[in-house]
Length: 126
Image (cartoon, rainbow, N blue to C red; front, side, top):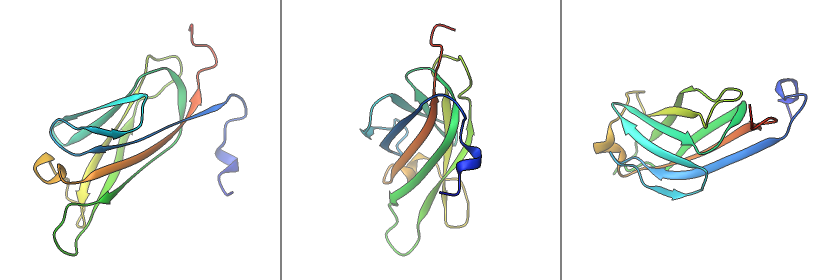
């Protein structure tokens, strides 16, 4: 599969997936285990529970809201999912074709889809 060298040697993986719109107050359209907020140019996905780390996060935009020809894409900016932290989050930006970050006036028409593959917390009491 091409990613075997980066897989964790121990523990189980968890998948958190969902969809949300890009409004100033984002609405979750599908998925559980997370909440979404917006500030400045950042959309922050906050996880509801503790994980031990990130294996992969992928985000895409299927309904881009453009009337003609252009498209938008999602860029993962950062993540703070670390061992034995409460919850954690990842931050993404929505960009146009030219790579310009778009704010909520543009983004309210789009829907962001994401999948986060996370390492399960092996000691939730820590």
